Length: 320
Image (cartoon, rainbow, N blue to C red):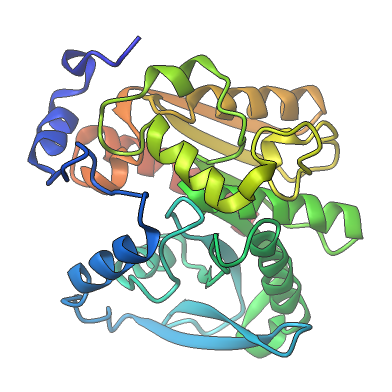
């Protein structure tokens, strides 16, 4: 059953109606990922000036193959002592985006949380199939722990956060940290996270025509991430963390998702399985909302309510 647009929150419905759509009825066409990347890059050339209240520094972390990965640190400029840090995995369906795309959002988050936001420039599919992005996440996290003093970070107060497509490498990184015995993160935060390649839930069939991130886009993205492994029973949890069956000893987790989001049911299922494994979880399902509503309608009342709740969780876990 398709979503009834009249069921959307009025502020969000107005934002949705104002969004430019392509010929396929969507904000983006994933049938040609390189062309879409070029289009988004051109659209983002006019960026606002960085916030002077935040210091921005790019770390170049060496990989085992001698390539390097960027981790962009956003630090409150007036910091006079070590701070907690949040390793943040950007949205983009695991096929789009970069840690260098935006300074406004991570700067605002750093100031709101009085913490360092470390945006991970993980490798994208299809050039790097899963679990390449998760390996990057593990490398970034363990580098931050090992070099915490150098970067003004409290080493045992580092969390993981992922939005949309970034939720997959964030969660897989948490699994790798647990399985490899590294210093555990103090939290895992998942906003409308892309977790499961199987697309078998009711919401994955329900959300087909909103044009934000519908079933069509999700199927194309997972095909890029996993290739011919999509839907196979042997897909590992580092490649699609919704497949994980052992969730013991995961970090305390925050999950937020919208009522009309293709990821709704896989997020609820993941939160429920974490709870069953004894992991403390805050699960928030926002009625009348679509995927990534906070980004598309940042001044809406629902976004402001969500941000208060989310920032409160992050602050408590980072600073406790």
